[in-house]
Length: 144
Image 1 (cartoon, rainbow, N blue to C red):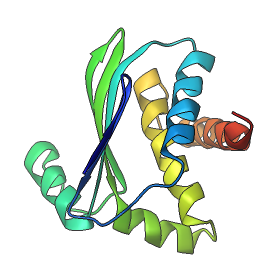
Image 2: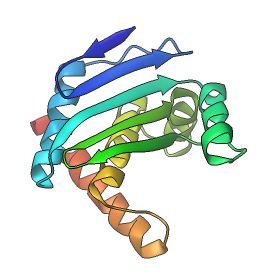
Image 3: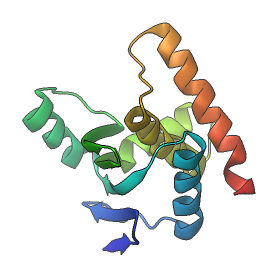
Image 4: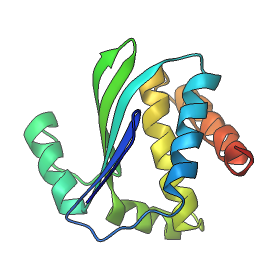
């Protein structure tokens, strides 16, 4: 199954996820790019299982561990990318962090966009800034 418009595409691989409020999500993601003064061409989100993403992690990054997101930038200006998200990992994280699944999936989607825009999370200071940005955009989500 695929949901596509001019700027964002949502694909589903090896999962039975059905996102709610797809148009609102796309509007919100577009607003993040606008707010950060960046242009997005095409951002493809691939929602998948742990195993599906683990195989990508092994094949392309030589990492043998589960993760909630892998972002593959394709161009910088305008920004194009393919972002893989593990629905299984996001579900587990939503429970671990006492968040709704919808909020956690939005957080991870924003996380991928923030990486593309130039934010990183390798140091403690970068993680703090990334979390602040995620929280800022999540707080604005319902008002968009």
